[in-house]
Every structure is written in structure tokens, then in C-alpha cells.
Length: 94
Image 1 (cartoon, rainbow, N blue to C red):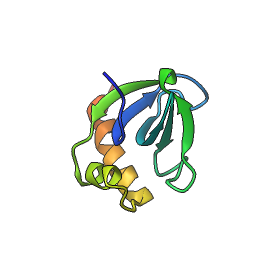
Image 2: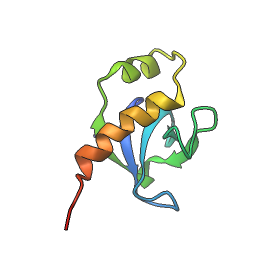
Image 3: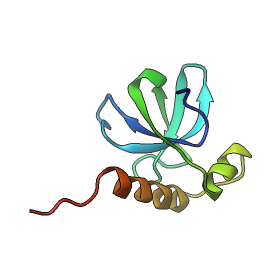
Image 4: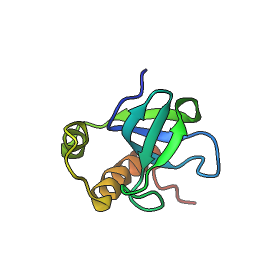
């Protein structure tokens, strides 16, 4: 599947391997990624497409804001990604 603006992706290479990000923009073979904590909206991570894995196509208000180039906040990113972290990695006891 083609990775597009506002998708949720997981880093598969680099020191941020395993972390979830939101795609803020697509620049050729590069993606601009942010998670609202380590990588803020103001300074997104530039990463090659082949170094990320598609997780989900986000269909929330945040997705609409990113696609229409409205201003988004770091807390909105963190809140959205927290929901996906719980879906992908449920708490394991024992």
C-alpha cells in the first residue's frame, strides 16, 4: 500500500526503530514524520519510505487537519498515536 499524508507508520530502521509516527508530508521518496514527543511538529523527522512500515490509515479529525494543511499540535499527535500503540501492543501481564 502506498504511504500517504496522515497515515500512521512504524519505523523499521535507525535508532527510532519500532516507534510509531504520523506522516505529515510526502516529498518524493522521503516522508516527514512526527510523534509529538521526540519529534515535534515544528521539526519533523525526514525518513526514506523503505525505512517505515504502514500501520493504519488514520480517519480522525487529525487526519482531516493534516490533509487540509491546518495547524496541528503535538498533543493531538500524541493522543492519536496512543490509541494505535494500545491496539498494536496490548498490555501483557505475567
